[in-house]
Image (cartoon, rainbow, N blue to C red; front, side):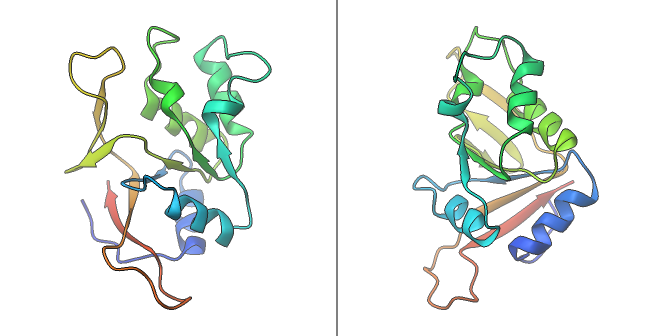
Length: 161
């Protein structure tokens, strides 16, 4: 993990665009405050993948999932659908990296936990369990203290090379 300070949304987008395939993950944001803040700052809506990926029909392949997510807005949330098994047997991080490579920049709201550079979803033994070490990723987490001024960012950052 590298300490990168705190980038404002424009600096974050520059980092993501610099090398397609890099991803930003919003963690520990159960109410979506960080995703909403970023979408507002970047003048883009938040894309709810769970609902949108199913319309008009569910994707039939990994490539179809990547293609659909590549056509979305910058901030993507509601990604639990990527963990449904045995449907498509997706590797969620690989899908996110493929989407970010095809259509940078992308910021994904991670629906599980991220601890010590390892992204997890669900628990061992469950069919939807996923665990993988992060690489070429920035993790944004809510600050412990609420922001009071408009120039304060509501997140802190960790970068994993």
